[in-house]
Image (cartoon, rainbow, N blue to C red; front, side, top):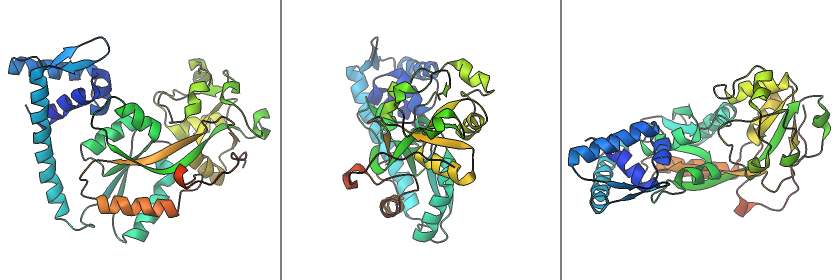
Length: 325
């Protein structure tokens, strides 16, 4: 039994579901189930009662998880104390960003760190939301930026979720090739997006309106020569620009594509769910908390292009206008 086994045990206990816990732990569900079963065999005690939709702890399991939390907390204290003894510029800040942000905000965050902490190195890690959450939990990154809906989905059943600090609001656009008949539209509802043109990603962006978008036919992506299961976000957008297709694009990416002359027009959605809330997740006791808080304050005063400040600080404003090259 090692610390990783204990973290896996706690993940199942927190999420009460092997599939959700496996997503957080960044391992396959069968592998996680096998690890827990092996632990039960080693201890000769049943830890979980397995139901159809969720698992519950046995009396022994409750005691075991409590001890496991204490052991993990002690291990984290040792790690955090060692990190705290270093000066703020002794190690780079490791920042986790999703594919819809990483390529377009690297310059923004480097400028931010240069302003706040001259000489402090920055390492940007690009991953999908579930992997980033796991990296925060295991201290592989100091802080990660996720949509609130992604955070909620990951920790919906958790009794110990990572803290979410709201940072900005970001509109959604329908990206279409420049010159396409839809490119001159003043707005569109999600339900009216042509299903035979739409290319959707497997991982949600974190917008409420995504539930109203039509189902995307796998043939749509194949028709433009792209496999959305493996292709990068920007690669898919480039294929859309060169074909009779459309896809969902967030405001930060749209602004960069505009600046780069990407060959796309961006039609605003008229749905109420056309904004996603982005925020930072970090674990309690993060030794780089001073840096994280400084970044939060900087963002509040200097939000990235294509975004708005959080809802609590918003003043009423019209929905975004169409973006065109």
